[in-house]
Amino acid sequence: MARIVMKFGGTSVADLERIANAAARVKREVEAGAQVAVVVSAMAGVTNQLVGYVDQTSRIYDAREYDAIVASGEQVTAGLMALRLQEMGVAARSWLGWQIPIRTNEVHGKARIEEIGTEALVPRLETGEVAIVAGFQGVSPRGRIATLGRGGSDTTAVALAAALEAERCDIYTDVDGVYTTDPRIVAKARKLERISHEEMLEMASLGAKVLQTRSVELAMNHGVRLQVLSSFEDKPGTLVVDEDEIVEQQIVSGIAYSRDEAKVTLVKVADKPGVAASVFGPLSDAAVNVDMIVQSVSSDGKRTDMTFTVAKSDLERAVATLEKNRDGIEYEDLISDADVVKISVIGVGMRSHAGVAQTMFRTLAEKGINIQVISTSEIKISTLVAEEYTELALRALHTAYGLDAA
Ligand code: ASP
Ligand code: MG
Image (tube, rainbow, N blue to C red; front, side, top):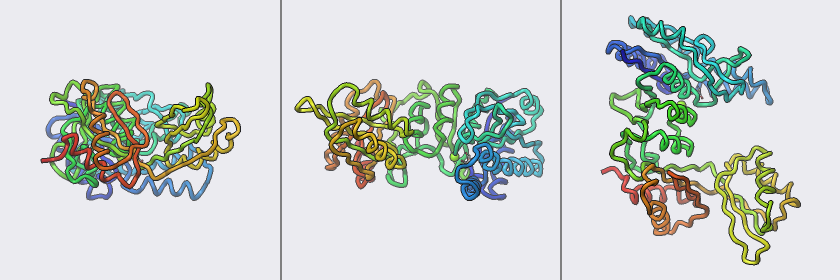
């Protein structure tokens, strides 16, 4: 018998009517003969409200209490969904993280799942009872409630699908799938029928908000087949699957962008061993994540410029750290710029095709867009450009890589 996991995000359980709509979808799967585990988020907006309560009560809070508070939204939707199903004549019960148990590590607020016990759950599923699992939460080694980071219900769903060896994991949301790029910016963006785990991982970590990055990583490592689909329409969504399941592989599958970038340039730093360490050591101690890095050659063999990017929210801290360490690093000037955007072209087909980067560079050049920083990986090319060109660059690249909808 098919066993599936269905996950409903906050907008899909935003009120009682939507919970009933989601329950009807669950009922359909049960009637089709599947064993179903459902993972629910809190009603849209509820987690934000709970986080707000914490912030208003305590500025530097006890993360264990933060977790006790913010995990409560999911408890409500799990209970409501179970009740609604019972009203529809479907056997169902709610499960909290500790009841399953979903065991996590001790990193409150951003815990990782270490193990899911399925001994209690499986026999109930086998009798045909639907399990409604509160997403986003687990139990720490000390028996406290631990949450998995914002958006963590996706990770609950994927981890549960892996533990239950489910046939698939359907992620119901308010968009109908994964697009080649942001459809709000590029009207010709296309919904992808399939995308590989690896590409989805890049898309998610580069800012496509459909899935929590960690959930994609888990799905990739455990070979979980994901489907991202709308809970408001009856049509297939996007399948996130193993690369070999994709027959007609596009060279480029998608274009992502992130406005959460800022650029820092150290002018005329010494060109000698140990300089990079003197710059990035203090930054890493200050918990500033550095992303792209370029260093130019020095014409005189003594001094060079070094440019790198950090998250916008880290810029102030990065600049303060570098100013504090000015004597140790020895640079002439520090220039920062928060009006930048990182645009990334993603596709596993890049591994076997040349010229993908060149298409990006030529396209941007034709539009008169200056590239400030470039970085590449096996399946991705990223460029940093001025933020004002975001729309122009995305549209031009989307056309250049043949991604436009007919
Ligand atoms: N309710 C949690 C959040 O808003 C978890 C989730 O919805 O995935 O972050
Ligand atoms: Mg989400």
